[in-house]
Image 1 (cartoon, rainbow, N blue to C red):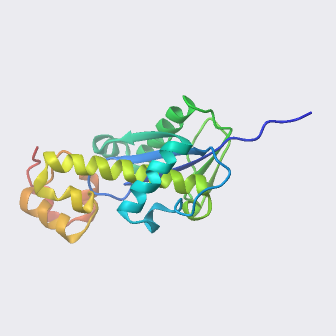
Image 2 (spheres, rainbow, N blue to C red):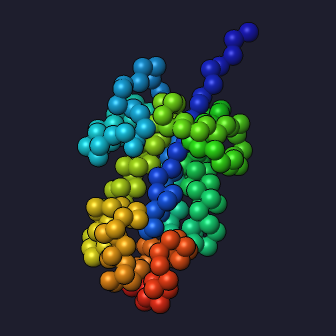
Image 3 (tube, rainbow, N blue to C red):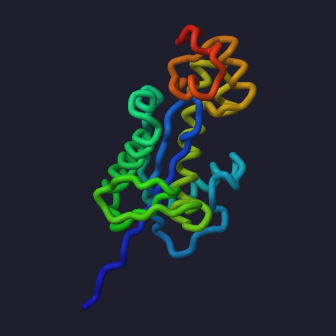
Length: 200
């Protein structure tokens, strides 16, 4: 009696440590046997290489994306927000193809209604997770570039919301905007930010 092959989906996120913007998760099933060498951890690729890889993934793979905005991150915490984004990504993927097993990057133990495992540095060792990392990163970077049009003073198109010196200085100069995670600012930045006005 023959059994069907497992359908394995890789899951990863982008923006978990950012000071502003959403956390974005992706779930991806590779639908080819041979994966090109540029499908690897998104952090190892340049922006142009990630865009090229994203195009290949879109043409050859099934994937879903989940997005949870800063407001929910502040309300429920980044761990719960990350789990929700991953669950949304799996749900969207399941509308295309239903995975039978999930591989999640990292050591956190998230809840899913499918069999799953967490793999430390999975984005470096599992091609399906690498593909998910690329999808999540490219999607989030595109969103932050769009947000830059609305909030140009913060430089989101450059640092994508992460805690670089340029970003710290713009927050000190202008105060946080609605995209900022206030819980992150309180724990990371100096106390002088606590009295700044929230701008829109």
